[in-house]
Length: 348
Image (cartoon, rainbow, N blue to C red; front, side, top):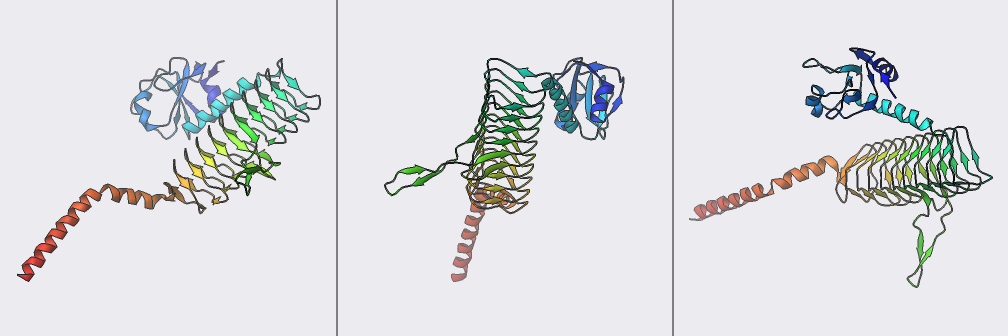
């Protein structure tokens, strides 16, 4: 599949510098790209490769001033990274649109309903009363339980398991091995020291434009719904417990875990390996540094780090002071010696 510089500029609202008819047929990293490939330049750390790249076409920020001429044709845009992401999305959309039909063997209940231009891969299972929207792609070995609904333009990657009664919105991407709607971790302690399982009769509700990484697990609610709100992005290997709510456009990095009934606001940024206890609230726009342990609610807009998590700026100051402790210890000893000397001189 080939595109000219002029076509690409039209897709991303850019301006061509050079030959608008030059064509590219694939993508490449700026340091490795070859003739006939497209790349982008956004990070100043890669500036040296801009002038040595063999790529035929480079997407670049409109504000960047060249230090020397380039062989490559340029497409100028306000934000090269964002424009490149848009281009990749359009390319992926074109590639997935080519998939349609139902591969065999697969099982689709007689009461399941599928929209137009749907793709269902081999060895997939669609249970009773499943509803699948238009242009949705379900890849091989996916399990879609009874009464599940999946909206339009969503992608369910291989091996995804969606338990009964869960609701998936439009333009949702769920990556391989993710489990949506498994039982929440609910057990009632008994007088004899044993634990009695609390039935988990709720579901999971995933709103529009959500992306869920590979092998992430989202537990169904005890009652009601575990909710991932529109625009949220979850990385690989994340655990979301029962009755949690993740707010709009919140991002969570890999290996984080959120305990039951915690409410996370919109626009929150959570780093990798963060652990969050249950029944607390994370305010809108909060930032939690990687490997932090969050044991109490966080105010909107606040940044925290550490375990237990504390104010981010105060923690950095404490770390800076701790690095100076050997020097401070030396100064204290010198001051103690000086005080003893002054006392001795005064008493004599």
